Image (tube, helix red, strand yellow):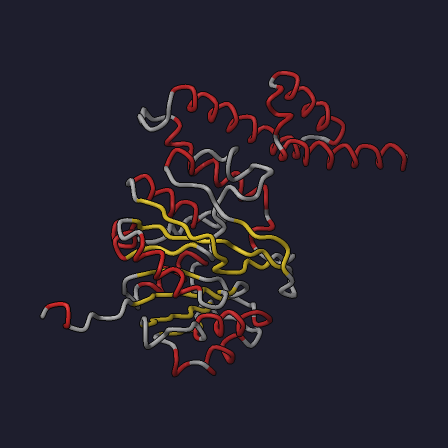
Length: 319
């Protein structure tokens, strides 16, 4: 009978881009290779792409060479290039990437596989992301509520909202072969938001999202991580959504488009106020809120106002 024919095991394709993070790298690699079910329930193809680190990372990766599908330690053009280079070496059914300072939690792959079987038409799969500190101590859990394209581009109700349970982070997100083939890799011109851009292009193609309310991965918060460059990251996000806000996309209502355009301009102005002379920064921020009181609901606005207000206070008292 057809049902008696053994079905091939699904294949997970995982890439770790790495550069000078030997302190955390081994935990990342172990979290992939130690996933329960590997070899029995699913197959694993794992590539570690190091950018020519000089902190001992290559020696750590070499310890696992016989268990990796591919690895290298050589100069590259950045994180997105490293991820793309890894996925050029491996292919399968379910994809994900994990940075060299983050790590998967036990049974993450089994949980993703169960989610995929439960929602076979979904192409972007995610769960809870556990935020931890540099030592791996649990800080908080985050679970995105994004399901549609119009939600993804609404930065102020998801990505810049004070409630953390609004957006994806990254290590807890997986995607299908169909997603990988249609979206065609990560944008190598981006420094901070290559993952957002990747998801944006997928949801723009009307790909479905499914989630499981189970922790899948840990995102490590530490001083040297790239996402600590908050302002530059926000500006890059604004650039990503800009073309969609000036289009006639029917998925964005005229009211929503007007609101998003206004918030986009206000956010740029708030960030750019930091480049003004100190005595003009607070006055500019207060003037912006007087013109548009909706800014008072923005955590980004209050962060800048507090920061610049303190600077002005200390400068005057020091004088």
